[in-house]
Amino acid sequence: QVQLVQSGGGSVQVGGSLRLSCTVYGYTYNPNYISWFRQAPGKEREGVATIYTGAGSTYYADSVKGRFTISQDNAKNTVHLQMNSLKPEDTAMYYCAASFRYYSDYDAPRFSASEYNYWGQGTQVTVSS
Figure 1: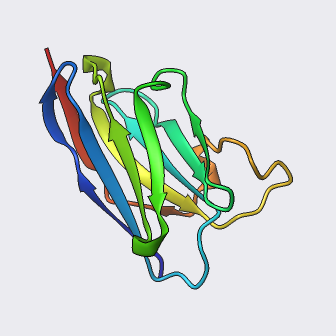
Figure 2 (figure 1 turned 60 degrees about the vertical axis):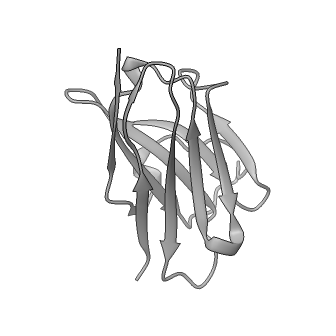
C-alpha cells in the first residue's frame, strides 16, 4: 500500500520561506512523477511543481517559477518543495501526489490531478501581509 506522508508548512509573512516534504512509503519501485498541487478556498486544485524522478527533471507553474524549487532525496524517499519569496496568493492547502504511470511524453510536466494515483494528506500554507 503506497502512502505519501507530508510535513512542513505553516504560517509566514510575505517574503518569507517555507519547506514542504513528502515521503513515499510502501512502494516496490519509484514513482515516475511526484508533483505538488495546491488548492485555495473556492478555487480548483492546481499543479505547481513536478519532478520526473527518472531524470530529475523539474517543471514549474508560471505563478511559482523562480520562487519554488522541487527536489528529491532518493536515500530518504522524499521530495521537498522549497518555497521562497512567498506571496499572499500562495496561501492554500498543499498536496503532494505520486504517479507510477508511463507516458510517451515522459519527460514533461504533469499538472493534471487526474494523472495521479496517490495523494498526501495535505498541509496548510498561509502567507500574511
